[in-house]
Image (tube, rainbow, N blue to C red; front, side, top):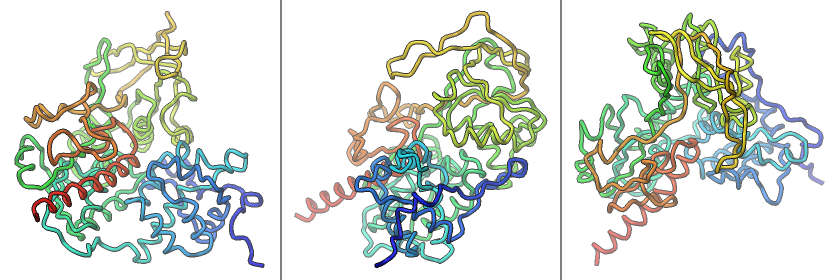
Length: 478
């Protein structure tokens, strides 16, 4: 009788890849987790229970076939595991690194619910695809047949790149327009290297270029090229700009020097620390935490990126203010733990009331308590009167989330419909807008969300684009 390769959760405990010591990792921007060895990856994959209703798969936005590629990994069929993984996910090695698995696949693992500790899905996913790159299994996109139609994609973030990949596989001609000098969007300039080393993103960009995707970089739509010009050049246009407008802080002194936006801070750090670019604002200290008392305001994943970056830049102290408690924090609990290990201090149930100094030298903080639930069901923070105190700060980073830019105005296209939140009106499943041949995907439609959702939207949208292009072709042929 053949030995059972799976269901090892009863005898093998959950084990993450080795995490570098905090004292070491806080001095550089390298990823903090080591790679699984082959035997360890097989062992951890073999813990999967192969349950009849895989909640890990249903709670993954991409509905990745997780049980199958775990089984293939456990039985040493790694190339097949990669092919199954790649079938539903354009960038599995990126999702394996940055997805909040504790809230998605791993958080819904059946054996986790039974107290055995979840399968380390993200780490195995990363291992599979990293091995695929090393072994040469990842090939440039080579469509079986080229098509004459072209699609323009505005935005080189994960959604736009996922759409570009799928369109090229179908033989469509693709041009991607982006405001930055490197493609990748927040993967390149928003997420720090200790979570996602930049060569991981750059090799995907290169793969797309080798597969025939044309990139037009340093292109501000509405300034360097109009939206109508892009529409005129292509049979269809996909808007995948993401949301980059930072939410603002109010209160006395909110405009003081030394209070900066998270996106500006992280972009400067990634350019200087990961790419070696010359960044005047970083070199002058304006967007550099070295030698400073840093206060980050916010409780999401962007706030976690900021506090951990400040530690690595050599801040004398780093504190994070969040108006709710730890249990209600929207950011990854795994990231919060990593930040605490590295020396970040979290001040729960606190919010900024104002700022002192020019440049800033303190945040006026007021203590909060959680009151009655709001419309979403979360307890609403309430101010505790008379609890104000001053928190010393030389650099204050606003990490309160992002909102959409006013694209109809910026692009001179008032007929591009938006919602009351400023996001583009589009069908969630297809990305179709009210404008013929114009689609929209990712955060610019659903609001600030996860990379994995942007990838899902990009892939789904391509199905609709191809359907519409085929319909046009059929009509033209009649």
